[in-house]
Image (cartoon, rainbow, N blue to C red; front, side, top):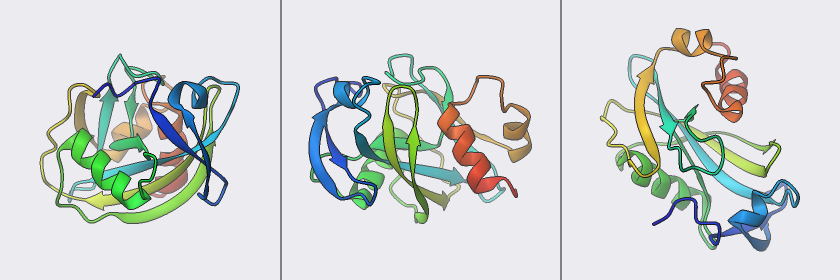
Length: 170
């Protein structure tokens, strides 16, 4: 599967997550339509309190080569948020035994897209097996290490925003 297929269909949703239509990836990411489409994020912590981050492949159409949320992906047409989360975690990190905890749903807008993000966290000491077609590398980071690297253009802007919002007290 080509994970940046411009002909992939995304559901278009309202602010509550109700599907209102569908559009191609290329349209949702064109910087003009700003069609709201749902995504899932998972912040995977280990029992030492470290957060797993993935380095995005250079072939990604958004923020290639930057460190990002443990798991992030689009919800498919006719796919539930829960099913998309399980699929993305399995596809990106090869994990199937985890218990997600819902954190927040919010709208993220960048210069090229507008997403309805459904964010979760989980704790696991299982070793992720990354999908090399989507992720260059992945590793656990200490919270201190993450905070020390903010603003250095190594993380995606969405990750920095979400991390500060959700975990600033860590």
